[in-house]
Length: 353
Image (cartoon, rainbow, N blue to C red; front, top):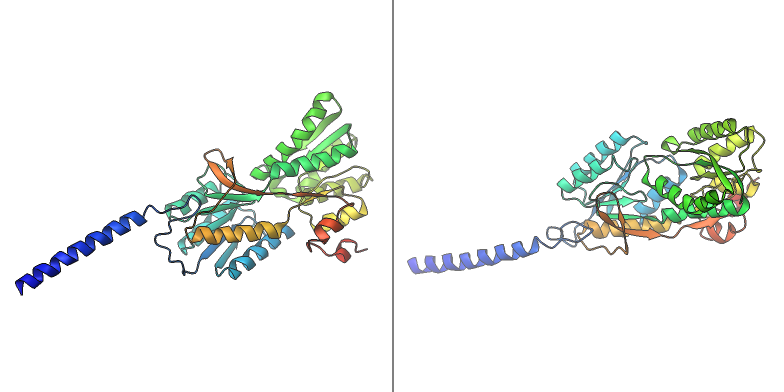
């Protein structure tokens, strides 16, 4: 009996040692863009936390709907929170998602720097984080997916400068707290600066638009017109919302349709203005493609799988693995071949009288 006990004890020791060794090896199996896969069974249902800055604009509603649809098709659950442009509220909502034990957190930051606190809290809980459309600065965010935002700015300036190669320009930029707004402006200046240096164009007004709000863009444009006695030859507006505000101010002075105005996001109202002739262009970013790709990657990250990124962007702290999709400039000449052909908007809605 004593010999049997010795034999059982010896076998148990060997099995325990083998098990500990196996666990020790598995704990190092982490991906560059996801969490640890050692404690995530492959058949486990993934829960994604989607923290959004706002659902105010049409585009963010489209992003949410496409993201949720593809994530669910892949077998994942999605918990969505929108912060109504409130930094503190977004951090609080993200904390709530983290406390619920989501497997991955996807963040569209209202404030690029304030959202770094969200990344820190998620990292402490060993939850991977994806920055969606807007980069989170000075953080250890795992992955960034967006469009080439510098290219967006270049497209805006290229279309407008082709129409107005000389004259006074007003820049109605986006929110200073949004890293994308800085990238748009950087792209714009790549085109504008050589013309400024030549003396062909002059930037007579340059202002950020708080929270991207159209009413703030309206005030900016009113100030630009007042300061320059209405002598504005072209407007670079960062998106369709700011374009709408700028055009409202131009309309009040009888200048709508006479002063070219850029935009971005291919919102229905903007496309209607392009057809009418009061807005010159917008930048179409196939949001469904972005949202669906992000959802696929989020599921992979939630499972602890490695995600392939072909670029890296520095966020002030690290070089973030990044995936950047191509935007498309849209004018009245290619509306049918772009947004209508893709089913982004219906022809009858755009050309509605």
